[in-house]
Image 1 (cartoon, helix red, strand yellow):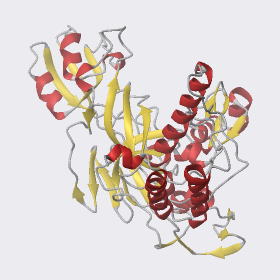
Image 2: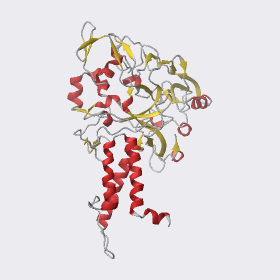
Image 3: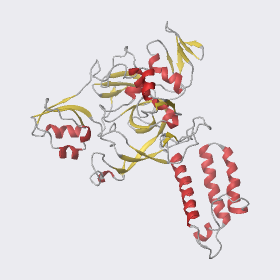
Image 4: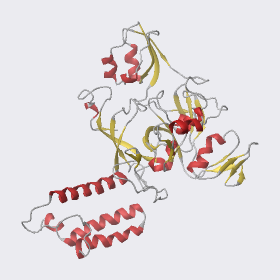
Length: 448
């Protein structure tokens, strides 16, 4: 008996799918789903219910219905792709330059959810192949809401990992400016002005906020410091990865650097500005390798690092840098020290550090937090002097360190917001050019 003959035996086929299904239920950890074995048994053996009601059973010689065949293929594709997206891999597109020169604007990625374990959908009622919006309206319903649950994966988030996560501040967005940080706009322009001009306000569940991708620079329990642009964890200088780039002032003899040379190096020339009054480039993003090349150009006179010392350079102020408190005299290049909250750890609270933990306590861990004018702190109606964290948190930074809205501007990433790790660039295009010049052929099927 061949393998094909064996598989076409209804008992063998039923046993094969039943074993796969049981393994999935064990991974899921919700044994009510074992009732699905009844459906598998009936589909293969007893056939009392036509589960694939849209599928037509043809008699011998009967002409096939092309419309029904297409419907069958579409339903199968939707079910299979949705299952893969939830539990294994999902496709994403890089929308900004915050991770250059590691990931480029226009990179299309496959993100592995197995790296850290997939999350059981908290908002499962969603139009297939959409995330949060379709035709300008929400593509999901909150009629069913599940509690956060993460299945077992291959590991945990480590320092240096490039991570995809749900944007923590994305729980509130503005209809006319959904990509902007609502809380930042409110701090700078006032709530009433922002809502009147960009509203109305839309609330989103945590798993339906926009996706961000950054590099994890600090994990729970770490103490992070940024000194002159370099990251230190627990007072130890961290590795500067090859794709990390900083901003430099490049002075020339009055001539522009050949744009082809810059493009070949990997610089996003669409975001590069030449100031003839300088003359040169006020802010050229360069990796260490690019820096050495630029310094050797014949028309380059000097290269100087743009390091932001206190007070912050415009447009940064204490109102734009987390934790938005004038007591912390930090800049994007000289930041911290800041301790990263760890599950089960207790911290003492006071009127200064409450600004660091306010959003964690009230939003991410769902407590009623109130602060009195005399500095007393109340959680769920009880005066407290300390707080114990319920989950882990991470600190993320973009590799394009001077052009990245990251944890320095909005704070910690909760563990329940982690989505996965980019594993493959399968396609990439450059928006600065037209087809076919916009295709980055060298990035096709690039493993990360």
